[in-house]
Amino acid sequence: MRLLLLEDDLDYKESIKEYLESLGYKIDDFDDGEEALSAIYENKYHLLILDIRVPSLSGYELVKIIRENKDNTPVIYITSLTDINNLSLGYELGCNDYIKKPFSPKELKYRIEQLIKLFYSNENSGQVKLKPNFMYDVLKRELFLDKKLINLTKKQSDVVFCLVSNKNQFVSIDRLRSEVWDDKYICEADIRVCIKKIRDKTSKEFITNQRGIGYKIDSEK
Image (cartoon, rainbow, N blue to C red):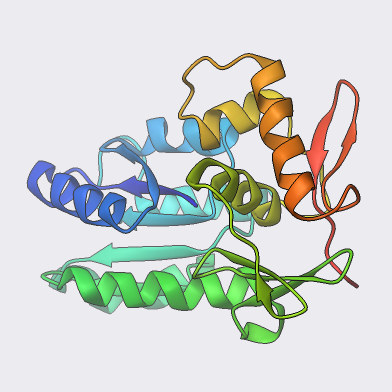
C-alpha cells in the first residue's frame, strides 16, 4: 500500500518513514506542499499523512484543492499543539483524522489501519469479496478460496495487493512497475509470467486483462 508523507521536520519525517516502511508500506516523502500536490496528481496513494505547517502550500490548502478535484483519498493530519484550535477547519475541508505531536509510532500505525479498514474493506470487516468466490484480507494481505489460504510469493502477493487496492479498474504495466517493483525496470514478459503464476494458483478468471490497458481484479457486487 502506497502512502504519501508530508513533513518538513527532517527527523520526524525520517523516523516516520522508516517505521512505516518496516510495516510494509511504500512511502513517498516530501517537505514541500507544492511538491506533494504534484505527486498526488501523478500517482495513486491510498492514504495521505500531512503536516499542516509546511512550505509553499499548507496541509489545509492541499486538502482543499484535492477535495475540490473529487479526490477522496483519506487524510491524517499531523498537528502541533498550536494547530489544535484550528482542527475544525481541517475537518470542514475534508480530513479524516489527526494525530498530535509528539506521538508514538504505534498510535500512528493504529490510526492508519483504522482508515484502511474504513476505506478499503467491505462493511469495515477488513475483508473484500472478489470474483470468482475469493476472499481477500486487506490488512493481512492474505487471499482465500473457500476459507483455504492460497500460498503466494512476496512478489505475487504485492501484485494481488496492488490490483485489489485498485479493484474494478485496470492497472497499467507502468503502474505495476511503480507500485510493485519500485520503478525498477522489469520487462513486460516477466510481469506476464508473474500474473500467470498467480492465475495458476487461483483461476484464469481471477485476474483479467485487456491488451494495451492492463490488468484488474473485480470485486463481488
